[in-house]
Amino acid sequence: MANPYQLVWQYKLSISLIAAMVGFMASLSMSVVRSVNPKLAIPSPNLNQQERSNSQSLQINGLIGDQKEIYEKMLAYLAEEEAKRLTFSVPVQFQGKTIRSRVLKNNAKVIALTFDDGPSSQTTPQVLDILKRENIKATFFVVGKTVKNHPQLMKQIVAEGHAIGNHTWNHQYHQYSPSAAARELETTATLIHQLTGVKTALFRPPAGILDNGLVSYAQQKKYAVIMWSADSKDWQSRRITVPKLIDNALQDAQSGSIILLHDGGGDRSKTVEALPKLITKLKQGGYQFVTVPELLDMPD
Ligand SMILES: [Zn+2]
Image (cartoon, rainbow, N blue to C red; front, side):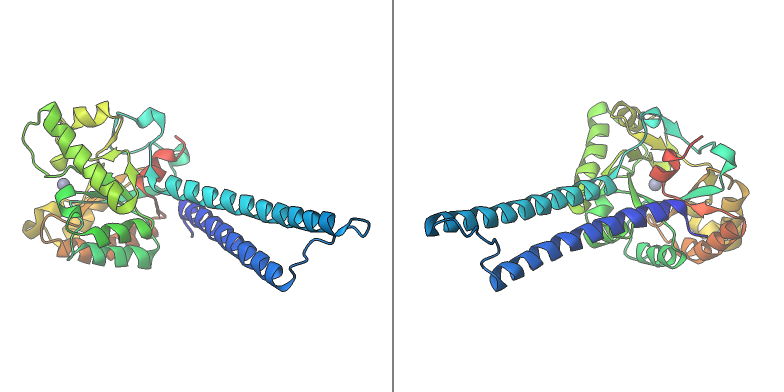
């Protein structure tokens, strides 16, 4: 079954594309009409030559003006839609709050997959391929110093419709002063925005540490602090088996869950191996997949 949130997203995108095409066609056809028929406006027969010429140019100018206005409106509309698509804001009730999962209306069978610590040249392309094949959108909590080295992957993540969250610049666990916390979040946010146009209001603290100064800064800045309710424990890397990783994720997967996975920060080959199986099991359980911003937008 098609995911309703993907449909909305695809619908918005197709509206944008149609608008762009209409605008482009309109501009093209108008220039064709003008070049084929320079006497686009038919002057009234009882005007003298000077008046006729004035009347023609006025009417042609009028048409060009209208068309230009429509075209500019379309461009403005497109820019606005694109900005909306790239702004991962959160509803007011979640701003500055810590969220582990959602309690959803009618226990809607909806779940959010999240991937931390990337992008990674080794793992992220494989994860993106699987998500594309499965027609699923997910959320990537990226680390600034890693983002810096993978601008193309960042662009790909966003172009393929996934959401982005801030996961600090350095991914360290020590205590932060307010100014050091600000640096961690702001440098990462700035780079994400420069590379992709994305503005994100999602923050995930490294290792889920809530009391070392990062979260208090994030909350002060009205980020939603996104934790998780189902931990695949793929971060155990060598110590975990693929079946155990899948079991861990499924064990706590329910309506409104946020599942913790990793596409960076080490060898994530087990995550890549487990992912298609995990998705299949969840689909068999009737779940649909949403990004974290979509999850936060759902009714409770
Ligand atoms: Zn992390």
